[in-house]
Length: 247
Image: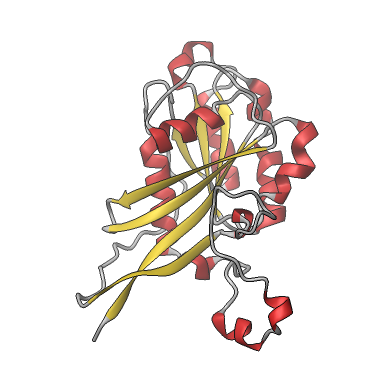
């Protein structure tokens, strides 16, 4: 029996106050480069990364959305939360305000996206001698929000890959797009029942701006599309129970 091999796509948003290293984090992960120059993100930025998940033996395409942390962009950036299947809440070791804002960011994402996968990332751990919060405080908030905690250093590429590996694997363990509260791809059966003038069907093009004739990637939380055909059996998946652990 011929079985289709599917390509899994996950929309992942990165939130947190400005200057905590969100842009540097996804640039390090997606492009393998690090820049120490701060450039303010205006509303949102987008990168794509094809990743092999070591513990599942599968591939996943991350659509990485870097959102501005400044309050003046709040209403705009929240529009880009919709359809996300996972989230990174980031704060800086040397920025107390970014730590104090963790619960606020958690509530914003939950309000827009529901119970999606989330992790807490403490960035700039190379500056622990100048930390503005204690280790106990960080671990307490992670346990309170039931979030897995990662301590990272973008400059040294410390634990960056582990963050994305975990989110990709957990997304698949949860059932991929089926685990999301709202479907992000219109079923083909519904399209067949919809009048032609109302279909508005376009092809996926993540780097194309909304309204330019391509599917708006803001709504691509997690989708699967046939890639090739294969006759081998299904790949096995290693089970994992979600918990709150410290990295």
